Length: 204
Image 1 (cartoon, rainbow, N blue to C red):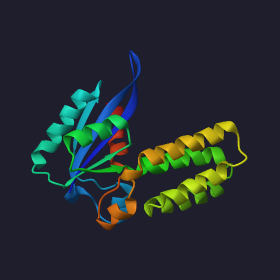
Image 2 (cartoon, rainbow, N blue to C red):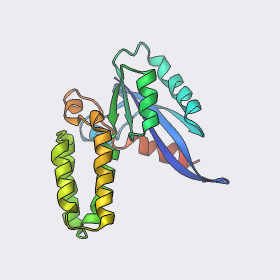
Image 3 (cartoon, one colour):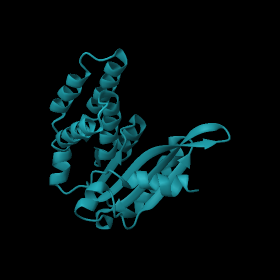
Image 4 (cartoon, rainbow, N blue to C red):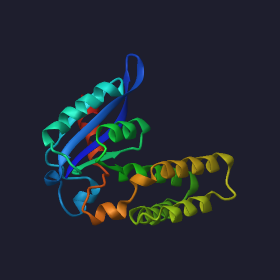
């Protein structure tokens, strides 16, 4: 399988904060096995594309990285943060590709929400771990019910954050069949592109 990860990173420029679009392409043979694979560690070889500006140029650069792997057939797997422009580009340019919401992003949104819900660190960690299990089992309706449960009798601000989180998951539900992806041996993210942000962008 061929994996392509796409994400954005904010950097401070002379014109203020701007987003650097970053991509990483690697093959399944370049991924470490076992627990390291699940954490997104041990990517031994990969190619990068980065662009500070519009997505057209960035998409061209990503396409150039993917081109050597043709014929692609159904071997191409995209992992992203769920941004709509990424989805549209992939659907148009690579209609046979599998699109996955990077598990790192699915969990990070959940973790951020939990910090507003639970003051106790241990309680927060336990709740997040329970919801991560639901994510991995693709039990989205159960996860949404859990989010709605903890928002009851809370502030309007927290209820709005809960609605935003639920909306994020519902918008990306077709890219969250993690049980199916893991059964097929697919890499589901959680680290590679974030590591690339630190390596390619922030250290330059």
